[in-house]
Length: 310
Image (cartoon, rainbow, N blue to C red; front, side, top):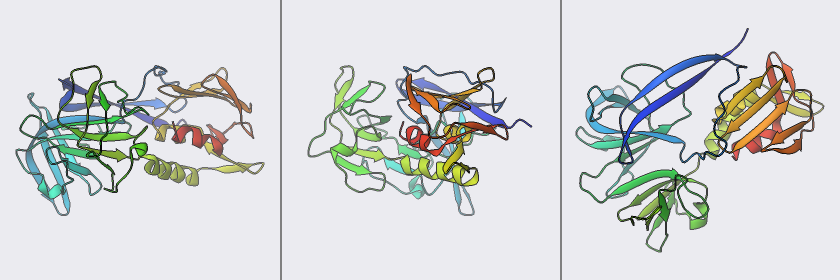
């Protein structure tokens, strides 16, 4: 029996660099070994998040849970944000983290949620945000959530950061960090003034560095614990479920019996029964050849390091 995987696509209406309106979700079921449409290898993932901005029209309290009803500027653009205790909530004007109890009707907020999270197709869309920004009603306070490179330029090339001694640098737990800790991370950047150049230049008031490695590692470890076996003292793991949990597209070629794992500028091609595999067009070697068991391709566990550090 073929197992089914779920691909969820979310579309958003954007205006002046800020997403508005409701998310439209479409759920499609495909055979687990179907070849997925490859992504552009030159495309860079500027953020792991999608976002939605609107006004809180209702705060729903149910036992110990809180949900926000968000209305966008367009007709019927409604979205539900179930609030978890893990959500990071910031005031864009003060840059301070606040409690979910401080979210009230009439506030304009922007919610950010992982684009790789599967969402149920219902109306209104219901998605738990990982980050919520309370937008300043007055002009001046700006927030950008994006990945930044080693030069502290956002991967969408919209914003370049210059750090000075007054810039507050913390991690998501509020602990102080250094400028070196920012490179390659997803950042929440609070700023007020930026140049009109491309990219815009700014000296931020505050930067919060997000580290998703621990969360990804925990999910991968859980999947491996539930599905693995040993071959010649090498732990073999199911490549499809592991890669998809990390946001990769996994394709299957029935004729060559090969698997292609791809995300942005990273591509890995694995052939069953062959210890050699390609990593961004360079050849590498597995200690043990991948093989099919119960309709799934298993590979040596050492591939996880390549996937989780992409």
